Length: 212
Image (cartoon, rainbow, N blue to C red; front, side, top):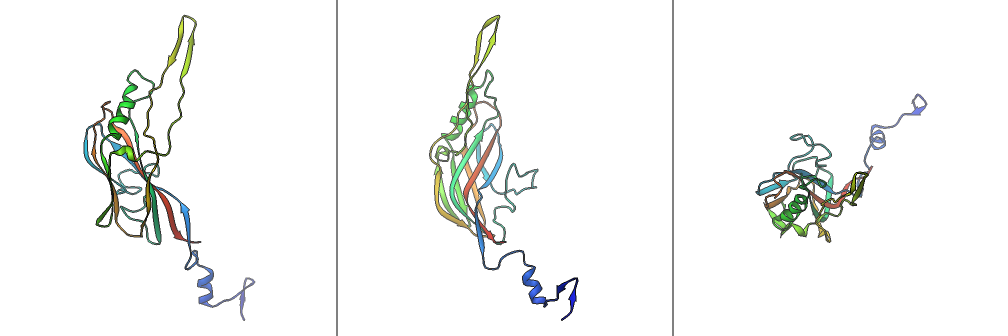
């Protein structure tokens, strides 16, 4: 049998098997939430949809979303949703004279609104208010003291607030590849600070994909 460069020649079928980058018939499962962040304008909003604009659309980067397609999971993948969280980051600073507006924005936003998760033509989650979808992460805070020989120590108090509670759990809804889905936030309240905020929705869960 002919040899080339010390490698014994094989049939085209054998070369095809050896050259595969995926393991046929096998999948791997990883923890990989889906997320999408947008701007929440200060005014009240009737509806705001998420997971519609993938990376590269409208200037979105990996910091804004990890969606590769608009409202779909790519071919060869499945995604099982285990929970939903909604995050709001007010545009007002937490260490200024108007810092209390930060907490006011959080309260106004989460005590109102509703969330709708649609898969295909059906609604699978319809729930309000948004306090039912608290984030699982938060910022740790502490006060700082500045000493001044000419005056009494000045204590800077940071005004910070966050929605808290158990994650909104979902009983293993599975998104198949190329199945349309969307998350819509409804009747979003106006923000008392008058400043735009950053808003995000995360679908926690497991991603299944072809094994390599």
